[in-house]
Length: 101
Image 1 (tube, one colour):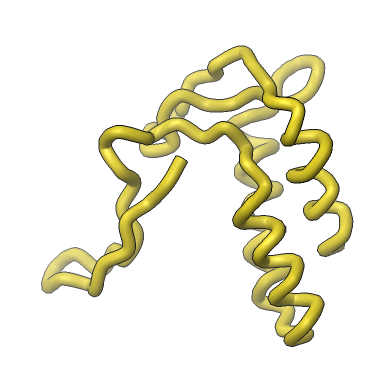
Image 2: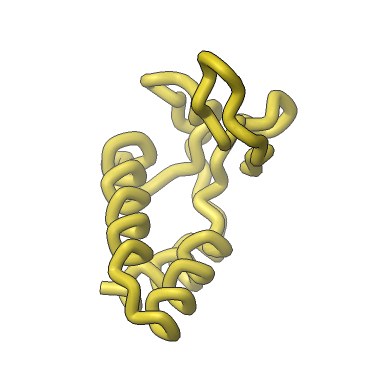
C-alpha cells in the first residue's frame, strides 16, 4: 500500500522498496490522481506512460472474472487476490485512469 524511497545503494539500484507491513494493494487512486494532474499541468507524457503501466499491472494482477480485486502482496509474481473491491476504485481510481487517457 505504500513504499519507502531511498537513494540507490551499491549493487542494489532500487529506489523504491515495498514496506514489509503493507505489501498489499487496495487499488487506491492517489498515485493516478497525482499523475493525472502532473500530466495536465506539464504536458509531459511520462505521466501517461506511468499510468499505462499501472493499468497493465491492474489487468495482469488484480483482474478477476467480474471486475478487479485488491491484492495481497505486490512483491510476488502471483500477488494473490483479496476478493474485495473498495468503492473508491470505481469512483476515483478508474475516473483518473479514464481522464489521463
